[in-house]
Image (cartoon, rainbow over all chains, first blue to last red; front, side, top):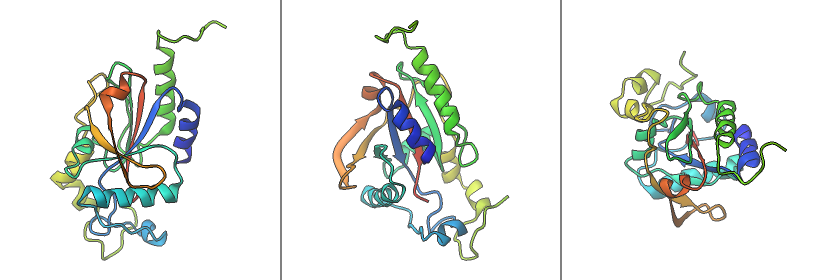
Length: 134
Length: 75
């Protein structure tokens, strides 16, 4: 999360950031990872929005993230539309279209690519009140 | 290669990668240039860590400024 926090600090005034909290990647009742066991991270896959909120809260507290968190619905509709599982980055442009779609995480989870996409999106904005040629 | 998975794990990498449910969740329906899926999702309160009662509707936010989305979970 460190890289994302850095991007949030750098661009948070110009870009809205949201964590979309989706179906667990490695719940105790699914595919368990040794790494999580060693770190004491054990979560049953939430089946209600309330349970998902509790898991998200534990995550936010542990990671100390300041990025606002949205909860995907119980039917995982948003994760399904974006192919967000287990993790993935997107940038939506001011035209409401997908400007950047990262590869599937964890291997394809690349904050640097998101940063480049944000820089490109902001540079392409023609409605900026800031003079570009200073 | 499969990350270290305990023997008592109900599922393993192969199970997940052959599961229609998980495949649906990991396969994007959107490509670059496509209109973003217009979600309307509850916002977690940053102080209480409970659902705040507020919702965020993507079209309302993206109409004002770009939106970076970080999909993921605790585990």
